[in-house]
Length: 151
Image (cartoon, rainbow, N blue to C red; front, top):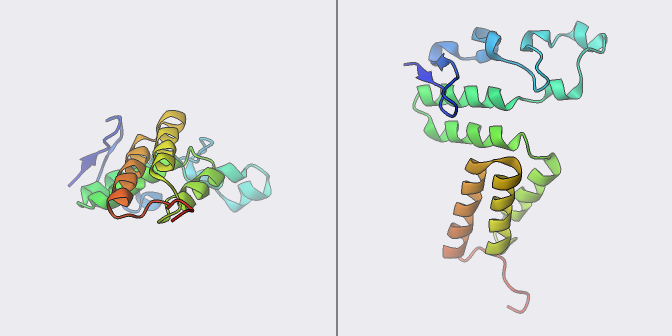
């Protein structure tokens, strides 16, 4: 089975025969700076042609991985890849702060909803924002929101 990349609809058809992309579809893989994945060589490192950002994963690669996961009916894994793709735009320190804020009893509902709003408005991370909104609702139902210090 081959699946077209959703989101923009402009992605390639991918299926199990394309996995792993680094072997079977190198033509699709680029670094966040736009270099083809084949440019990541030891000679390029020694020559100073590779920068730290070249070693980070590109959101497009994560979207391709999501398409592959969907092609083998791994929808939850695909959703994880799509969220990860969105989070590539968020600075590491903010990701860590969100991680800590999502721990049980670490945040109020208002704080979680503010995180969701920030993800959606500042980073266009609508899938991640929806997940944080869902977490706020679940935490409220399960009494996992931060408690007032008077309690």
